[in-house]
Every structure is written in structure tokens, then in C-alpha cells.
Amino acid sequence: MQAEHSPISVKGSRWARLKQDWLSIRIFGKLIRVIAVLAVLVSLYWLFVASDRYVSEATVILRKTDSAASAATDLSAVTKGMLGINRADQFLLREYLLSVDMLKKLDQKLHLREHYSDSEHDPFSRMWLGRDSIEHFHAYYLSRVSVEYDDYAGVLRIAVQAYDAKFSQDLARALVQEGERYMNQLGHELAQAQVDFLVGQVDTARLRVQQTNQALLRFQNSKGLISPQTTAEGLNAIVSKLEEQRSQIQTNLAALPRNLNADHPNVVMLQNSLAAVDRQIARERAKLAQPEGKTLNYTMEEYQRLQMETVFAQDIYKAALAGLERGRSEATRMIDKVSVLQTPNLPEYPLEPRRLYNAFFTLLVALMLAGILKLLESIVRDHVD
Image (cartoon, rainbow, N blue to C red; front, side, top):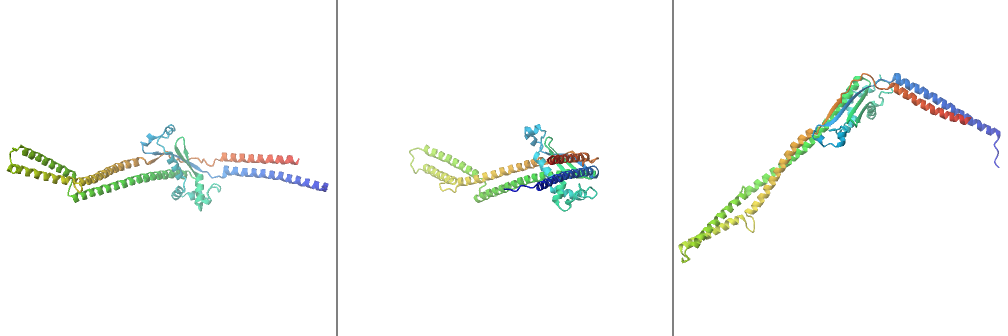
């Protein structure tokens, strides 16, 4: 059998629980007081201590200079009023404006570190870790510079916060200028790469024309003929005339009296003339074609092949030249143009920090936390009762 608890032990455990519950209630009360004190301190910071930050804003748009490209836009782009706007280039510009490379250029030009880490500003908003680490410096830069893309209007909205109105305007202006320079540089590099490729194609085509021309000249010099086709046509004309002469001789021979002997001088003369014409025709035809080749028809076939290669190379060269001129024109039209819709303004009133809003929000959060703690305290009190 288990031993029964004594009244003294039961009373002691109950007292321990009550003591623990009352301790929890006191902790809730202390937490509420701590939250109230922190809320008051933070509100006082927002209202009286936080340094003024001036906001300079600018709006830019990126367009293609090619007017022909705008004709190929889709219906959705037209309905949104984004004719000629390249959305991808807008995001590319945004990424560059928020990059570490841009931060380094701005720091070198405007000394951002000195401005944002100046001890004259309140210790909670100025930069502390950015002096030694580019990562912390960049994180602070992103908290003070925003570049947002307006999908409806198709523009980039740049907002810069600084402790001085003129400095914020200078920083926003530097962002716009550097962004425009960078996008123009990208456009020029792309255009130059395209033109360089076309120039290479033209040089290759020119070299091929020179090679085919030299091969044709060497062939003509080796054969001693400028145009084998013209020579063949001349030989054909000679053979035709010889055949006409043979026909005339044969006609004259047939017109002789039949009673003449075979050794009659007229018969012998005509037969000798006919044989001479036949031999001449055979020699001329042998120059044109023979079964073993190496004749004028073989030469003419090789010449025509070299000539076709030369003409083809010349056509390619002409097409490459035309493509180069067209590419130069297109490369010039395809360069991006950064247009500034709103120049960086000189702020007259510090929009940041939003003192009343931040103070009200701090007190609201403190009240919510205090309410939660009060609710927990009530639950504990009910448990104690």
C-alpha cells in the first residue's frame, strides 16, 4: 500500500504553486512596464532624435531608337501603352543601378561612405559597419536607394534618401547619368560586335574572290587562252567553213563529165582539194574533242567551273557588303535611349523618417503586445483563483 500524503506536504506543495503563479503575474507586470518604457523611448526617438532624410526622385524610361521595331509589337504592349519599350532592358538597368559596381562608382564620385557614416547624424540611422565591409555598405545602400519598375507605365522610378537635400539630388542625378552611360555602352558594344562580325564576313568573302580570280588567271596562263569558249566557237566556225568548202568541192567534182578518166587533171585536182579539206576538218575537230580528253572541251569545262566559282564568290562578296551596310544601319537604330521623364528634384522638406507614422505605429505595436501580456496575466490570475 502506498503511503498517504501528509497534510503538511500537501499544504507545502500548494503554497509553492501559488508562489510560482504570483511570480509569473509579477513577471507579466514587469514586461508590460518594460514594453511601455521602450515604446515611449522609441517614439521619442522618432519624434525628436532621428535625423532628417531628404528624398530626391527621378523617373526614366528606356526605349529603342529603332522606329521599325515598334511596328512588330504585340497587342498587349499596345494596350498597355508600352510601344517601343523593352521590359527586359528596364530590369537590366534597374539591376545595374542597385549593383555593387554602381555603388563603387558613386562612392568614388560622391564619397557616400563619409556622408552616410557622419557622426553628426543619429546613431541608429547612420552607417556603422559599412566602413570596413563592402557587403554591409551595399546593404545600407539598398536601404537608402530604391529603383522600382512601374509595370503599368513602363518606367523606372528612382528614389534616393540622404541627410542633405543637395546631396540627395546629386546622388539621384549621378544614378541617372551612370545608368544612361552604361546602357549606351552596352548598346554600342552590341552594335560594334555585330558590325565586327559583318566586317569579318566581308574580309573572308573578299579573300575568296581574290583566290578564285588568281586560280582563274593561273589557268588562263597555263593554257594560253583567255576564253576557251570563244576559241571553241572560233574553231566551230572554221569547221563550218571547211565543211562548206568540202560541199562545194564535192559539187564541182560531181559536175565533171562522166567520161573523164580518173587521172584527168581536173579530177585529180578536185580530189586532192577534197582530201586536204577533210584532213583540215579532222585536225580542227581533234582540237575540240577526242576520246582521250585533254582537248578544248575539257579545258572549257574546267574554265567554266573556275569561272562559276569566281562569279559565286563575287556574288557572296556583294551580298556581304550589302549586309555590312544594312547591319551598320540597324546597329545604329537598335541602340537604347534612356529618356528622363522627371529630372532629379531638389527636395525642400525631409520626407524621411515619417515621424508621426513611426511613433504611432510603435505605440500601436506596444499596445498590442501589452494587451497580449494582459490577457496571459488574466489567465494566470484565473488559474490562481
